[in-house]
Length: 257
Image: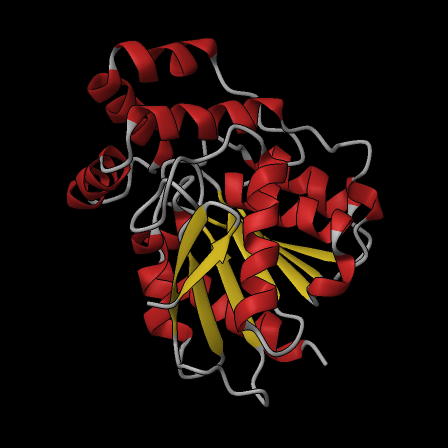
């Protein structure tokens, strides 16, 4: 995997090809709180024959180092650095949950770096329960298990839920706490209507962490946005229904000039 270094941070990325062909559209995937590249592996495998695909592992997650951040703005710097270093033309950025917050902020602060947005299970505000913020530091295993119970639909296979629990448990408690603190501090609801990029908004109808009303609000406020919801899927819709999510992303990206 290529590594992008920014200041003291080494950001590992999964890329579909090195170097990326300049004549193909590029989609950059940004994971959520406590995530890593494995959250996007179905999108990487399913879309790499259609587009350039880059999966970013934020600092503190997966193979990237050192520590993570506790503000969305710091992670925006990391994604912007990856775009500058690896991508030949303005990509579509796709973010899940906290990753969606990063992508929205990137669209507002670095609009010329991107050409479109895919926002999955996210919102313009991502308040976090104090019991989660406290529990990550005081009762890590049980809190991670609780988060993952809320993250998946009741229709999702138990093996997938347990895999989600295992993946989140790979990140240190301090990193996950920083991620959720970044989410809790995030609020761009007064500015989100200033996003002008074509935007696809995706949400599982059983999402308990970022309910469908969050996605509907985004769709109402972002001028050039469309919304698609998925029954029998929760917050981790891209893991729960990868084929349907890939189809929606493929159609959207293909439609962009």
